[in-house]
Amino acid sequence: MPSVYIETYGCQMNVSDSELMYGKLQAEGYVTQETPHGADVVLINTCAIRENAEQRVIGRLGELRRDLKPGAILGVTGCMAQRLGARLLATDTRVQLVVGPDAYRMLPALIEGARNGERFSATDFDLEEHYEDFTARRFEGVKAWIPVQRGCDYRCTYCIVPTTRGPERSRKLADVVRETREVVAQGINEVVLLGQTVNSYNDGTHDFADLLRAVGAVDGLRRLRYTSPHPNDFSDRVIAAMAGTPAVCEHVHLPMQSGSTSMLKRMLRRYSREDYLDCVARLRAAIPGLGITTDIIVGFPGETDEEFEETLSLCREVRFDDAFTFKFSAREGTPATRMPPEWTIASEVVDRRYESLMATVRGISREKNMGRLGERMEVLVEKEARKGELLQARSRDFKTVLVPGTPELIGTYLTVELTGTTGATFTGTPVQERQPLPMAG
Image (cartoon, rainbow, N blue to C red; front, side, top):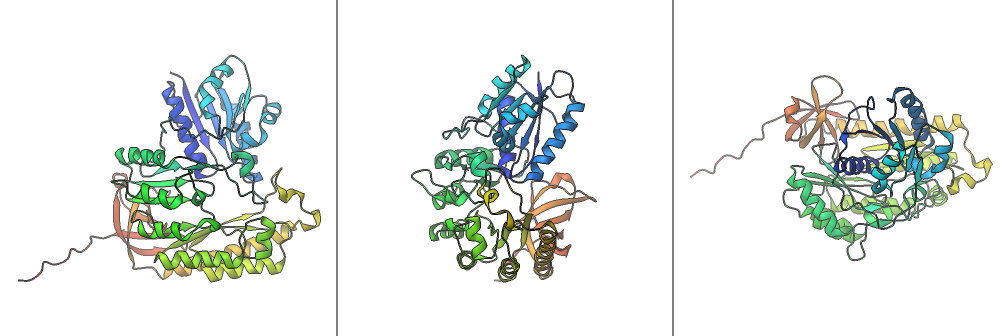
């Protein structure tokens, strides 16, 4: 039987797409491999959100060319494939397939053609494609990524996603609920709903509030998460559904990008600093103990010292639990590349601001985490930790907790007491919950 290896870069949507590709190829008789060595087909599922993501892939393709067995098929899939298309075939003669996110249904046929010496680029958008008949081969045994929406209509000036993923379209609510029931029946009771702006979900009849309630009502589902939302789409209906659906976890990843209204306008984020703060306030008022993480870009064209300081001050005001911080990366085809050259921020200024932002975010996170030592919480054990005889677990509010234990505990829920913190993660000790004493008399 032919074997396939898929190497995945980028976001959770790419992970989910790799699971779909594996599932499709398994249904066609392929067996999966854990390494590229000796595989008959090697696919690199790529990200295009930043230039260094693409450079990593280009370097990796060079490495793989030396290691592939004779006759192996090498393909590039995902967002970088969609962005570059046939240019990838022209610049790298060893690559035989370039397949965008809406063309995975064609993979078996494209691979067969590549065996006959043909080279293909399949990058047309298919606005009806949700891969409903695919059975994903899931990587993780403790949670399931379930796409509910593909593409994006927001068109932020720095973002390549509308080019690589196409316009926004949502799956039918009934299909999402069906897939959730299927993964719960397989023993997985944490689900993560995926979309580029997931809370703008609308299948023509139901909105994201309806989706949260319907998925959250699936019998046996214990935890429900989603990523990534947009601040503009947290309607009162959505927030009420979050607060009123017990399975929905007390965590929101709420991309901010900048704390300056003038900068947000240049980014075309479609909200102001005040709008963002109002969204945070409404979420926290409805959901006690809510953990909030965010995305922040440093060095966007034209960023002034004053605008950067507004970002720092908003971090101090919101007090995020954590933040994913990025240096601006110009992407071909985005409006940001057409901004005046004199708006470009010098690399040494970007580096200095980035370090300042990191120090601010980490300081807040460490202070908040130190204040939680001694607290008890439920965690789901997800996998073995990288060091020591520890396991990595996750709380409902998205805290990473390292606990002692053996791999048999993976997939189980524990109550732990938080005993230490590095500032970013916790260490915890499993505790036996005290049972209430029987009533006298």
